[in-house]
Amino acid sequence: MPRFEIWIDGLLHEPGQTDPASAYVNLRQDGVMMPTKSPEGSNVWKTGIDEWGRVWESGQYVTGVLETEDDLSRYSHPASYADEHFDCGHVTEVQARYPDHCHIYGSHDVGPLTISYMAMGMERFFLRLIEDPSFVHRLLTNRTDWCVAMCRRAVNLGAEVLIIGDDGARGAGPMISPRTWREFVLPCHRRLVDSVDVPVFWHSDGNTESLLPFAMEAGFAGVHGLQPSAGMDLGRIKAEYGDDLVLVGNLDLAVLFEPDLEAVRAEVDRCLEQGSRGGGTARCTS
Image 1 (cartoon, one colour):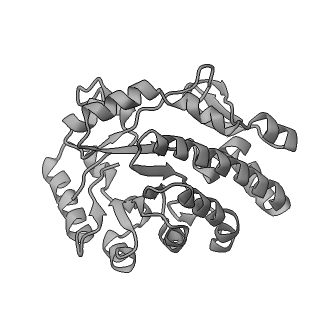
Image 2 (cartoon, rainbow, N blue to C red):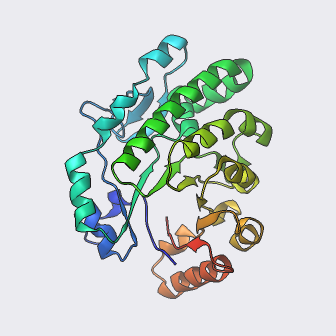
């Protein structure tokens, strides 16, 4: 069973790791995250309004400012801007150091739904779904263009698997109805998957069970998260979707934060037992 982690760079000091690339190997992972960087002058994860219209305060997302057609033009960028997110020399160096590991590109900053509602602010975005759906379609198309550009750039640099963070659910279920998802989000995800020739995984927090048929329809190779605290039952999901989707995750993070190693082992064993039936699962704690 392959083991990999994603988006843990901010926590590497805890196990005493200093280099993100070697940390994945030192932690006995089978995958290494492709290194990326923030373009010069970007406010992403800092303080202020970033280049997509999201407002940050000391690294925390606050709201969004995008509201009009002029705003959409102002807070959009050409596909060539993707080049500024990668240091080609660094990527090549990491690949040369770890040729036997799977090289993964993953991002929470390109998922078309997430980057759209964050740019507008969640309340404004979900109101506009009803009041001005044509504008939301244009915004989602624009952000899908960006996601495709980033993913193609990553694949051209050697990424073998893509994991796209596009949160579409909370603990009680999806943020929008299945009918709305089919109209607005599914075409974006399908276009993204069709744009590259490597497996693409979809990450979302929350209870995404009712959205898994859309993940299959979009062509995702698998889904990541499967948040147990949101009611995601790995055994049930494996029985229904395990033949069509690779299932990644489902470990209860609350257990991992506790010092009881026996409880941690029991939680891992539960996931192995439920997820390994018939194969097709990956071991990931994120």
